[in-house]
Image (cartoon, rainbow, N blue to C red; front, side):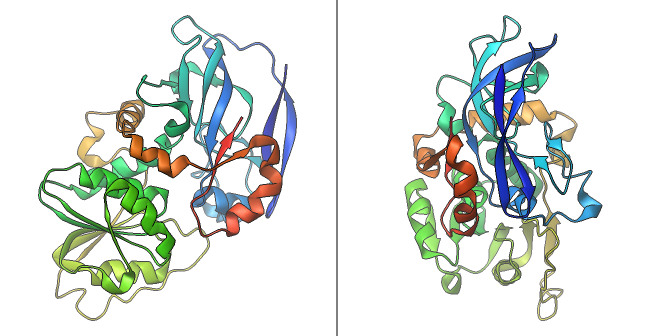
Length: 319
């Protein structure tokens, strides 16, 4: 059969290309895609050619085709139904780290079967939820913590959502875009402007990918607090003030990245275990508000420039 996949072919330009699929090999499944998610973080940098050459090997997506910088078929958050494969997967709805494509093959060990209480549309948040979960493991968030999230994109909002599920936490989200307040309100999280962030937070998650946001995060820390840096800046330099009271307050900046399971859980869990836990945490209907907008796959190449430029949350892709 002939499938169609999205390829980034030059900075800011994408096209749908046909791809002939032979029958799946033993140990592979064929998936008919239902939805996929667009990342305005890493994927946007891929689309605009902003991945540093030094990071090309490390930034490969699990089932990426082509190479950086172009042409490349990139993406890592798709849901669909298995139409061919082994008996344990046939007919099942699954999540898989695959680029945007209407039909595709994937090794069966990379598939995660979706539970009945997580619809396919919401399940495209799994990769971002996995990132949020890993960040909390890196941070060691615990009962009664005062937590601030700087940056109310998808990842920041999911970090806030998980923090609020921990008993006794005081959770606040901030963003320079006041329109993001509606998403925080939808999740039951307090939203404030950067000028009104609460002080003395034990953990501050930074997910705005800006120097100003990192500065806000540092200034909002309590004594001996931690900033968990979740942003990836690609080729863009970052300027941050580590003078003032940074040292006297004994602050920490912790890097969190989803490529490895956090050290606190690495001895117990593999990547697949972490993904299963992340998907199980998508059991809240309020999260449907984060995937409310959708664009048809056929229209995706023409819509992407507007998606990259928009200040709103990105739509998901519908097949």
